[in-house]
View 1 (cartoon, chains in turn orange, blue):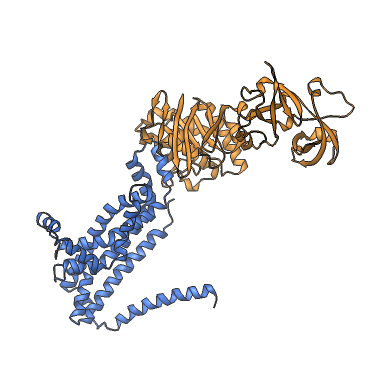
View 2 (cartoon, chains in turn blue, green; view 1 turned 90 degrees about the vertical axis):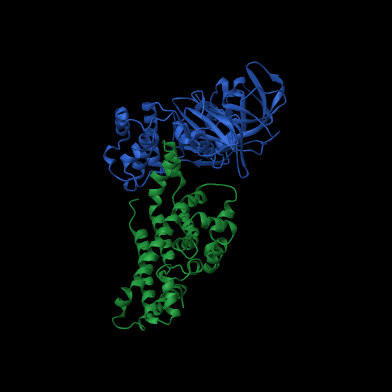
Length: 371
Length: 258
């Protein structure tokens, strides 16, 4: 287990206060957050390149915050890779083992496996400036992993790559992790990358850890409005928990002037009666009712009439912007292309939409009624 | 006239200004006198003295200036801006004033004790080295800081994470990457030390075959109205300086391994 406990640091007007972060060993942990949220500061603190006011960093039960970076056993891959330009690929790869005084013969098999997995055997005598972008990424990964670090920190190394190369390196990272089982903390602001690589996601916003958990949990069930907004979720609507309704399995919440019932485990924490909430509705789970056709029982409870305001062709699917009758809000609906074609709807058309209670997710509102 | 042409003409005007100055020296050359003056014992002495003192002063300036440059480039410490400002003092202060300050310092009780117990500076060879050091140390630090600023601190960060301590990361990574800038800084400071006059003459005086560096020899030739000798010494000094400047450009221009 790798833990950061009570980390506090200040840089100018930016503050991180008593941050706790737990990393699971042997998996890719993601520190996800927008630019300027303090991700790199945390990374630099863990590695020992930045002093912080208070806090502990614990690796395998030992506090390492007072050790210099070279004694921590933590490798680091910055965004610009920082391959040593005056050393050959081989010298770059062996830098860590030599600096740590490790016996090369003991690591021959591991190095051979690493070089083969990274496919960089033919590059060993070359200098970094003669390598392609992908080759540089592979060598930098090899250099960081060669000394078998206890923790591997990656500071947005894929941020500047074009989509093709990014996808290739992401797959390589997955392969490497499965093969070598190292513990990684990968910093990124890219949601897709976080979902692809991360088993555990830690969402950092404005220096505060807003949510930690398994990938599916975090992405499908944001715990705070800030996280939901960072994820770019559009279907966020104000609501209120009904005073009388707080049953064991169901919670009733006001929504668009009506009432919806949803499973009790679809709220981010125990809500109290009368509490203001924010309701999130997943855009791919909204159904457009086909008039004259029977509707499943689970969909009959939450039906809302309204108008199609706009239809956007997103290539792989269609976005439909729907305005419920009598409400000045817009609901985003994502429809697969084949569904959209079968529905043959147009802008300005009056339609009805239906949602299952399970499609809602309720987040406590810290800001009172509204968003 | 277009903006670009004006700028280019200004550059050529400056170039011509210095070329005319050099060529005007040649009009005072007398046939066959060049070698005679060059091989004269006092000329050879002043060349040897200048080069030796400048080399020692430059090595000392680099020895102190390189860690200072690193601190200013990479670290935060109390009164950093004050230290940084003082390093520029020799650049804006008249060399004579600098030499006078050194001379006055050695006349204070502390300075006198230093001379009695340690090395004698006033009117001695160490005085030349000290005067040159005082003139170039700030410049050396400033130029080496610029060279270090160009190397991303992330290289060191990565080297530290891979197991190098701070010294190891500097010598194995930062230093080799900054070497061209550092060598250029060293050459420029050495050339400046070779041509240093004001502080040297004030602290070390003008004693023939003792403290007579090349600039002092030029001064003494002019004082005794020996213009041909002064001209030849100026040409030698200019030759050394231009060679150093060319070397700097050569070091900087070579396509990096990097």
